[in-house]
Length: 283
Image (cartoon, rainbow, N blue to C red):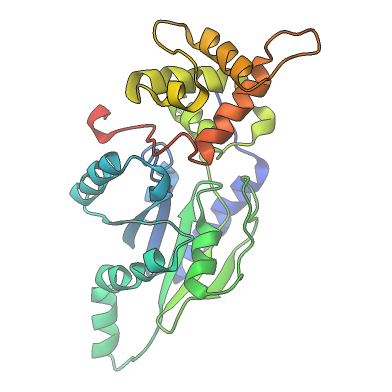
């Protein structure tokens, strides 16, 4: 599979971010805790050069906790502030404020010396599509200020949101980059839901996911679908899942496409359990 997706509005989004970056004190980059490296847009490093940086490992409640801890250490070693969160939980989002103050301590101190008091930190919320940026802002602000959705491409323009007394947040559209050099990056993004499903071969994605689960999460497939995943090929396992979930064609044959959609949806909704799609030790 060679998956590429870069619709025209992303070019406009990148230009908008470039135009606004001069107003920004801090760039807060949301990544998917299940695939933290694949869900990092390398263009953001260029856009945010010279700015304070924070990484939020969002959807941490869906990821493998042990692997997420490894990623936290890895990002800190890169000199970045990092925090794991579930952007829907107020208790998690409250933990962001002190980290923002820490990341922007030099800016806050400069303001104090100039006699500027209570000037809010301006933070740009950046990340790939469907990673939870608007949900984070809404939870932070305590109201539905930003549009949200469970598919990529909901936010199309910039929105300034006041998040408490000391922070103003700029919500930005989900931004991918023009080409994925590593095919596995595109596959992981597609499996997680950050690429429009309409351009994808869902059956191929399901076969990739079955192979990954067999290698890294042993009995997950057996326990969820009551099928044997021992020595069988991924294509055969997908057929068994179809039978287990009564995905049958009118001719009485297993329907692997319907089974593939069930499997991918089960992963995206964490019904398969806490699963991470990449580990820092593989870098």
